[in-house]
Length: 95
Length: 481
Image (cartoon, rainbow over all chains, first blue to last red; front, side, top):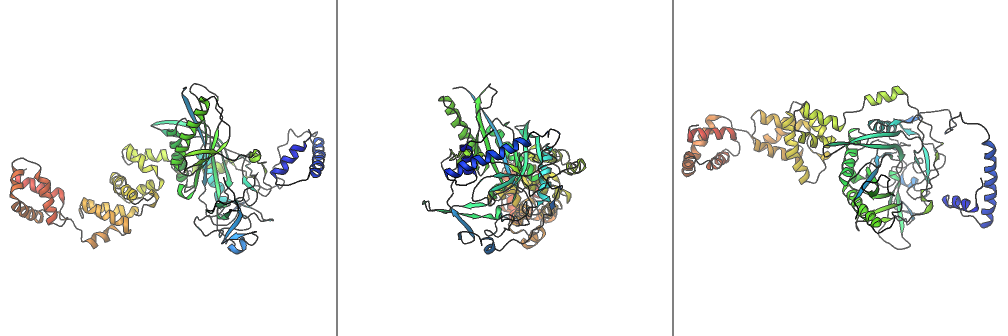
């Protein structure tokens, strides 16, 4: 199975990445090399093994429902490119 | 035109009634100033580690158990990837392949018959922030983001396409909201956006079995909006089919001002969420003992409570249905009865004066400003003959406004009831003497003047006379009965 240039362009769009034609061509090739490697891995018989969703051998890590202090708004907004009062200002979105 | 059948399924989103957010210790209290309930975790800053709120988990599992779901063990969280300014991490932590609850059901009562609605899944996720769009509509316009709501635990209950009419859809919304409130899982206040509905709607000719293309409707902010949107969408789809067109499987937004649904500017990629397991949150594993314990501790649910109100309290079905319709009202009745008040008397006060005053003042039932203790005391004052029914109504209204205890109001207003027969007989004698015409008519067999005469006695006694005693005295004096 090989990915087309269009599929790579689609994935780039989903990830909000803008590539030049030259980059698209190069990444298409590299992605296909990676997929080829996975094809090798797929030769291993994993039918008796549950899908790995987590690599740390821990379960049920929980927190008590007790409020902690939040950040002061000025700290919370310190990285905002723009702000209006204590709100983050972003390009207009509608829908 | 062929007859069409409506098919509706719901995605119900409910903010869980926890004190803190799902993965951090920020408060969930609504109405706080913008961006004062935020921290590095819910702002999606790099390097933070989310930790699941145990109370949110328990609420989710309890709702799943109440809906007879199977519980996934392990359950895992996944990342749902999309870009929107109200989502600071560019992914929403949600559940997809192993949600807490799967394949359950919910018994819905519509017009006296029970219909079993399938529950496809119940999963836990985080709410997004709130976008504010300033008035100006220029191209250079901007939006503002408040992240106080980002990370509030949100439970999503997805039902199967089992509802067949607007009435069923309305009954489902009401019943699901009630269930969440009974479980204490969510306050589910619509006006605060604590419960939100998305409806999946399709139509098909009656008698056919395949489901038509379904349309998902978003932006439904009230029960009434949902009803209007379903009616509009049903007509739109039927019209399309009748004209030989096809319904596109799409998401549409309800425009309340225009009273219509509109296709979202659909981007092909918008539903390509690329879910993958959330590496920062470990799986949840449930033992049978834990689940059995939670199931055993589920509270009395609406249907059981209604039956108990009928059987244990001797209330009419009508009363029981209304009183158990709102959990806060049902709790009130239980508390007042536990304090010794007669259940039917409590019911009469709630169904009469309390609901009337709530309605008059535009208050929600959970805003009932009197306590069960106050109502029980008021009922006792009437039962003991200390005040009459008319005075009790005035005391109730004042309790409702001021929250004062009934005894204080009775004292402050100088209310008392005169039941003493000799005292009342003196007033009756005076009233009869002053109104010879009315008295003569009544004596002659005309019942009409009785009300007038009783009213005169009430007036003379400044409203304090025991009306039944006055009635008896007048009858005895004028007719010898």
